[in-house]
Length: 267
Length: 289
Image (cartoon, rainbow over all chains, first blue to last red; front, side, top):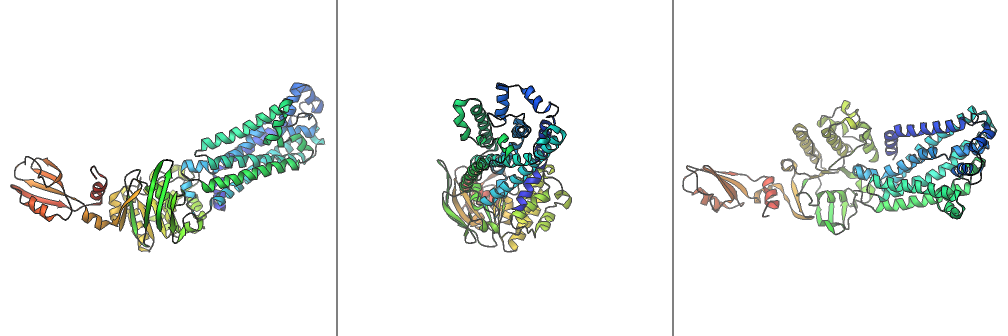
């Protein structure tokens, strides 16, 4: 299955390079401007207190975190909507392209008539996603590290913080990749799979944000994957239980994907 | 390869209905039928792409759903699709890699189809439709499969490439391998196939040797008269008159009809054209069939 993985990565390297570069630039800009904003005091001043600050904290995945604190600020950068958009695109595009796009384009007839099991093809695509996602996250970590060095006020945060955040985010991206694989295994067209995967990601994000900002709907937090990704908490230390919850539910989705793929007609 | 009571339904529609046949090793068998007869669905079940609603496909004794059974299979779909931004060679490597990596016949097949090394270094995006078709043929044959299933392989091939392709099929069969060829190019089927399977409305209409089918098909008769006849002789079916010439068809093996026609007053010439596979096809599927 190595040949399939290599071919997929070769075919996608330009888009992956673009997403990686995008993540590097976004993280570099956010972290690199911390000192420019005036460090901790300056960030607090810039975003004020009350609702705007609460909004910014909510975006960082926590209702109460002070994002002006250096480590939390790096955490905020790893939950910035632009970063999320770029990095979750890797998961969604990998999943959607895995099955539904092959069926729609007719490429499935070239691939699945080979003496390889459908599960093996799914596995190869999963490993391909892992390589792609790791590469893009490595770019994000590099951006955050360079930005932190450019902003001297961020230096009181440990150099391990971006790596912790990447690991924590890895679990979230695994969930979205698995959801996209499931949508792809079920859908007849790439558009249908993309629509379902995007709806899951965007719907979850909005539900989480609303739950963080409006207490009566707080219960929604633990019912959606973003509720298990608290970037400011992960900046302190990796939230292993949250990661485990995402990996477990992602694994269940992959099992469902496998069952759907094994039992469907590939036309 | 053996198909037993193979049936596939999509909702209320039965695309393939109780299809059974088997192919002998070393044979080239044509798979014919009008559009919508269920040919492609049957081929996709052979390739393991579609699950039969009932019945089974066995490749050399093993179910086609078992991946290892498809090791012997070379499959070419009707509309082959490649990774467009990879080169022809990279696409062939991918297909070979999925089949274990070996491609002993790649160079020979590519050369026969005039696909040069330089062509194969181009991204598939830059290939013409004919080159993509040739690439798919190479992809189906490069790993020297024991069973080759081809769905409309002659689409988009120019006459030279088509001739080369027919030669390749003969070469495959001569080496003891089995070919199932779905095609609407009846001349091609006639040229390379030993037998044909005729499908209609999802069912097998007939399985027979090409010569046997031709032998039993109606044939065209042309009669030339001294003066324009008022109408075509009644013994001709679908008879037409054009000046001094009357044309029509007579059933196979009817010497009595030929004698009757030969005795027509004012007849100068009588020509009987041997039945072709196209005649067989028209007999089977044409109006009034």
